[in-house]
Image (cartoon, rainbow, N blue to C red; front, side, top):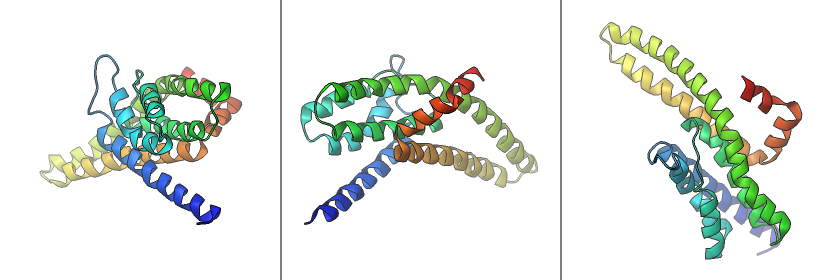
Length: 196
């Protein structure tokens, strides 16, 4: 198999694993909250398929899994932004030789998570409350007239919002990786978001 074919196969495998990671996150975002670490278990569970592919060495897998068991908490549908970026970071780490640069990038994984979870929670919680109020008002109009369509509308529109935000956030940050952070720092948007 020539090098181009091999790269296409690896890229296809990674795409499949990244999709699996997003789907695991979609299913488990709020299912394993604990008082000590909140969403870290579902975060780690979501990224494990990617870690297993990237790190054939068992010790590297364990080290990477430990990185993702650190405290984490944000609005569930907005967790995709951080998870996608961490998948991209782990891919970058796995392709680097052992040394200071790799160690620094490994240490930055939780720094990125910690710095994004607060602003994402603030934006996500506010937006979620607004969206749920609007969808609830639309659905209530139908429900008050005795129509089952009110419940169906609330379920469909609510999940369309959650699905859309999580899917876009995950795959946008996975595709763009650390470029997202650099762009946010250049534009100052992260500071403005935190202030808002």
